Image (cartoon, rainbow, N blue to C red):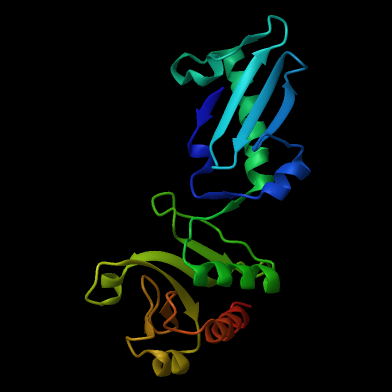
Length: 222
């Protein structure tokens, strides 16, 4: 079996969902098998408790390992078909059994859960060059009401290079003006500073207060 690394980058395994998907726990590792391309190949996936992941494809006619799908430079029409089928299985496992964990702060995780539970909205990662920045928008209006970013404190004019997670929230201009104190509430990073503010997700503002501001921002995104 060959280990694959990028598959779990910034992802967290949900072991319960692995079992629901069809994985079987054997000797502290989860195993899954499926057939590809009309039973021509057998694909095996092994996921260890330390999050390491291994895959293998066996040619069912010869019972020999098949590896051409892994050789990107040498993939031709047929090996490309094998790779596509192989990749579709991995993408399905990733979608159904893994949770995104690009954001590390406990406050950020609590806020993501709050938004998901109350409004059913998911994070959207729109910028390939900024994979740890995300937006949340209302389903019908498509307007943003929260932006979660990973930035240096220096970007908020603080004398520190620490990298932190922050949230940008919308409010009416009068309230934004009242909130901004450059200690707990900051002028919005990379957004309209008249209608948005930035909050550090490091405990300086209590979660219940952030939740109230999220609700206001959500209403304004109608």
